[in-house]
Length: 442
Ligand SMILES: Cc1cc2nc3c(=O)[nH]c(=O)nc-3n(C[C@H](O)[C@H](O)[C@H](O)COP(=O)(O)O)c2cc1C
Image (cartoon, rainbow, N blue to C red; front, top):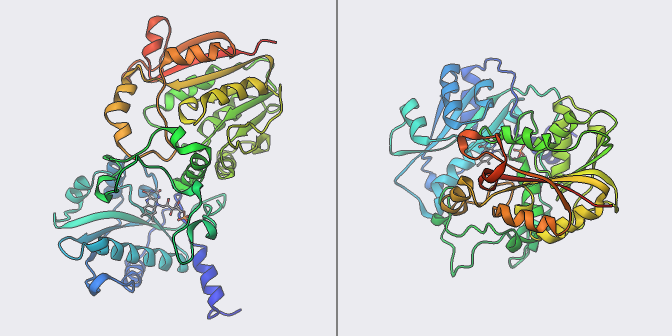
């Protein structure tokens, strides 16, 4: 093979990955310019080349950009950012001007990769008006995102996120696509693209039953790679405190086997690995192997013993474990995200050992969060962790009681200011999370 072998070049390009851990070493202006120059080789509609790129190397400014974005630590650790903008006013047909900027951004990503650097693409830059004010970007230019340029600082090489198989994303002659990869929207005569924004979505379908197990599994399996499996990933700044409280409800004495249902990015799993000693197996029932492989990579990154993880895919609601297997089962904020709650409750009962306890937590419609859900959340796009409908605390207790003995119940986060605070008495019915510890009677 030589450097002109097409397969060599294609293989090299296919190795490009998004990296979110950089070593921060300074990058030459000429190198950044070369990358941008390469980007301009991309096609553009009508050859307008309406793009404009603002290079930000100043760390103090990147720190401000990071604050505006609300997360993205990598904005501060990379060597430079290229802010992607385009000139508004022309060629909006089929978003051609956006498509052209994207072509340039991808070409820059490839150029960086071939040169041994990384260019991680970010549309999640936060309030673009604040970004515009900070960088003096005029109103007639639209900000579409940013490339973080630099060198990888990954002590552990992460795998590239999975790609959908060809048969799923390519059809011949006429459109055809498997059911699992066609996600539901609310029934409508037509779907107006402009009415489907993250924060205002007219057609989003939040009912898990309308999705079914296969589509929820497919969606969550690919979407988990929206972030890298790094420490702290998928821990909400506001609700992170709740997770410790939820894990704290699990029995710890005489427990040799724990099952966590439907993990997503591993935030609970990491806490379980820390909460239980070395001999305890942490079994997982993810909907997709992509969730468990992400979790294992994350565990490595957090320095945890991932050999203790035993993951088997949970398909069509039937848990892949035998009867009477576990000393405890953890069902954190899952009942409101599944197509068939009764089946889940039955399955948890089946796999629990007689006399063993399970902990269920559920987002509660009878709470400030329920109000937020009705007024805001369900009018937005379905989040990457999948569709959900908060439940009514009283109903949760009722149907858990039909299967189990209730040991204890409570509430967490009566108000946003009381995030993570446990409530008992009447207040428990009105918290964001309703929690129930149950026992399978022997
Ligand atoms: C238009 C676009 C926007 C993206 N926005 C973000 C983002 O805001 N934050 C982030 O961490 N990654 C972002 N990414 C990176 C994707 O998460 C990443 O490309 C995807 O998970 C596939 O991984 P890979 O690039 O390593 O192949 C974006 C990628 C594209 C193309």
